[in-house]
Image (cartoon, rainbow, N blue to C red; front, side, top):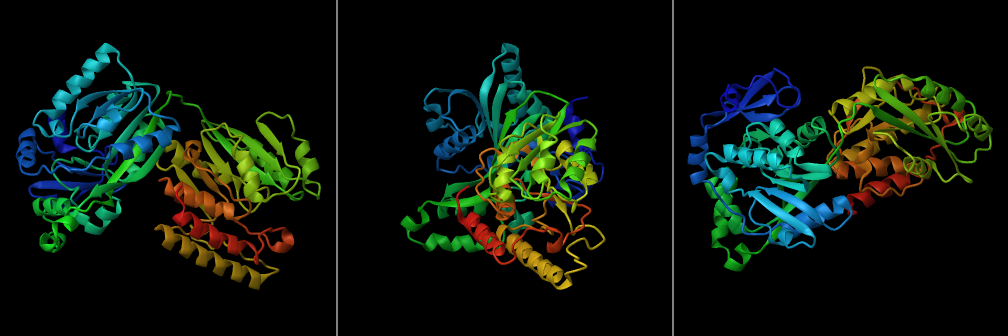
Length: 521
């Protein structure tokens, strides 16, 4: 069967294979459907080549500005080196800056204009086939508004991957449905048009690349240079009320104002993804700071070493900070044992400092932060790691207040203190959610589990409990939005060894929340 014909009535979700896909709204005679599981949106049935030709005749608007330098700086930031090697470019207009970049050879396979022609996909596939037959490979492949326009994104991505060198990088640029613009305009969003057959969110885009054996995924929002004339042309052709009516009044403004260029955070994101070997074995690196935990540390270490997760190897990295209660002597018993790495610090510098030291030694695909006490249940590891293995998420939080029972601080011997700490938790959770546009119940949980490649390009600096805030915020600002999994939790009181300083530490949390909001990361 012709795959284009087969695509007219898609039965399963491209991302999660779910069958429950429901009608959302229409663009003219074309239905937009949404997966009830992963929320991927799509046109179904897809428009024919003639439908696309008719649409594109009247709906081509070229942005007159160049994004070349932004692309170059973003790619160089990702690879931490100047651009060099061979690049394959599909989509967008000519990139003069990229084409003249030192030591970079660029092959332009198709422009955005060519992608609007009736037989664009057949031509594109034949060109890719020719490259595969020639055994030509590339260090970089740049896709601009391509994945959302091809009829078979997964198959297309597999073909693209076959053109990459062993550690080659794909840079994908396209609009996402969870961008601020899309969320504000809803069904009036300009991205909902016939030329876009698929409507990805950041999550579904990450999932697709994870499933197709890419790693070190990083999402960057793009601030595009535009002016009022460009907005007027766009909203005149893609009528979106009430914005189209309001933009008409800009025609009365002086020309120099209408032509003034400004940067606007539109719907587009830039996803970086690195080709990786197909390897079924995975490793979880557990980082555990230990300071004055003699009553618990042996039990925790033994429990971690005994823990088994199907298909996942485990390593334990212990950072001992010169304890004074016998913890150091207990940890020393495990020195030289298989799967254990021990870092000896000569003085305690704080939990954050210890975790940062441990992160420098990880060798696994996934990282889990574990305290050296028994407040959390190690049997929750399976549930926490599963979303990373399946590609559902890149960052998971073990939420203490996510199930049906209250699992926050209930100190039998210090009830008032417990209530005050719970009030503080809700205050800081609300502040973080409001400041960073999140909806988390327990952003400060000890159980933070994430893919090791999420730390690429992130510099961590906090030494105390403000590290929990720093890590969360910086991962989010790098595009890794966490999901929460309910976990078992029994809080210990200060009499039992809790180390947070309620007079000192909250001020450092406030500083971290505000500082990293405005700091370029």
